[in-house]
Length: 238
Image 1 (cartoon, helix red, strand yellow):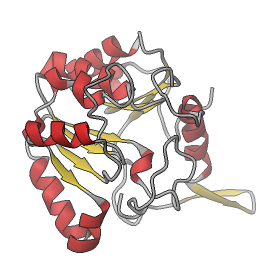
Image 2 (image 1 turned 180 degrees about the horizontal axis):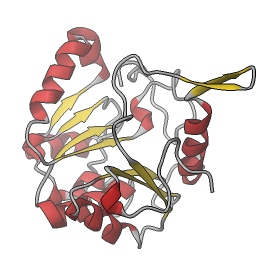
Image 3 (image 1 turned 30 degrees about the vertical axis):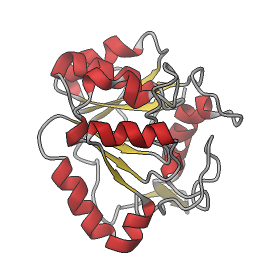
């Protein structure tokens, strides 16, 4: 299996800073578009293709303009099942390491939040998604993540970002929970820097989880998602 670019191999968790896990599962998705189960391996392949140039039999690394993981040791733990994921995440968090989970449909975030909450207690959530995923009339699927994970989320220290396609009950649930929503229109009206300040202010404290559904991005930039919704963030906004 192709591993994530620059990841260490055959090393214990104790020697890594970040542990990357793939979960190629979309069994809780109701979307007509399929294919999210292929994402972990495709992202790995892309990571190996986009980080360097080749010419005259030389490999030339691409240097990021801002920010880098060069000082972090990334362990690619491969792909796992839903059933294997909770214990893996609990072990990683208990070891004070950072898990990065690549799905798969977004209900995998429920597994992650419950596992992390079991170790750390309630945590703040920065949730980038076109949809709130706060349905309560139906549970245990990709549209009920925030309901199914309620025991692990500190809603008033959390934020929905890029949200623009919500059901009425989701907006009601968010309001009742005190969950702040930042829409793409807020990015236009306030600007990225002010939004970034709001996100950073909300992200204070050691216990935060970031979840990104690529449909937070406008289909012009990310057309291949399961449930595209017009009027989203640009790739540079994210």
